[in-house]
Image (cartoon, rainbow over all chains, first blue to last red; front, top):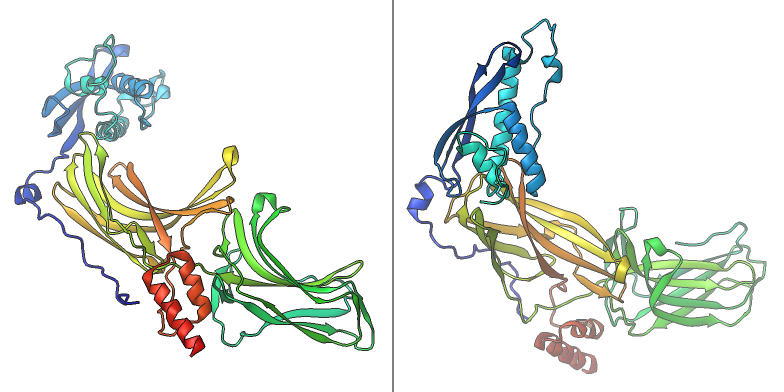
Length: 160
Length: 333
């Protein structure tokens, strides 16, 4: 019985990589920034909006560069839509901060700088996590959230 | 395991004839410790001596017979009472009577069939043992000696590579290839992963070896999965056209041969699990079964007749047939 005493561990043959692929822009470019918090409205009817800017080269998104204004409840809406329609485990949003909405607080409540920054950061993490999920990328609600001027809450849910 | 009751009047032990020359193999016990046992192959003869030593040399030992058994059995942990014996041989050593002095009895189980490999798992155990018993009215005096059996195979004639393209539509397409589908326990898995489309942000990639032990039949089938190995093969983000090599040495891991439907009681199967992890810790994986087999030690020119029978039982290859011829020639010559 002639058996090799040393195992053949040579690499399998592979196709050489095209240099354009090796050094070109990656196909997975997707960056979403949540920034520029602005307080809208007066008195007790004030709320904060954030700029949501998406830059991408993923073909599934119609616009490669989009910019919209969204408030916290819009993010909540998106979370609920995805929880209902998609099969993904939706990441958590930063807290609702109901206590901050009560009167007679010592500080600025919902409009305190530190809180807004914390919330902004949490929203940014949330949207990046979702937008990169292959199973969320074909949900119409995500595209509407990221790339349409305003959210039509009477839209027809579905896949892109 | 031996039974010792209070005031037992005799000791019994079993000694193999080839205890000096026979190899021992390490085998895990149920509580995870490793112990060494005499190693046997299918077809080998099991012979030795049973020593019955009277504790009080003056006192008579009455008995209903002395016997030795060779047993191969499967024990399901959830059903301990029922042992499924697939090999059960017995030799009577002494008829009922009296012993006035210590005695030694010879025994031989010739060319014993040992169709399966010894296995100690999470929910099932397959073991072989010799059990010598002095039968008495109230308490038997008994001693068990476990042995370990390995099942050997030779290089399979057909051993195609595994090559497949998998992915998620429009997000990730890869082609993976493993050089073989059947690997021996000291083999090396050589392969590669070729990226056709990468639209997700991959952080790293690993290959895991998963052992799945299946016990029970029909509706009460139970799978126990155990990740035996995790081996990172890529750290960082790949792009289209990139090939990542795989070279995984199996000898470093605690593996057994693939065991399929052993005596219709259990199976032990192995899978390679290719796992890609993206920047959000999402996991994308593809599992593929591989067959593991045990290669015999380097075959010397003169192979004992018994071991030649053993190797022929599995993959009757030209090699083992000629070894059998050679051994027959040597024995007669």
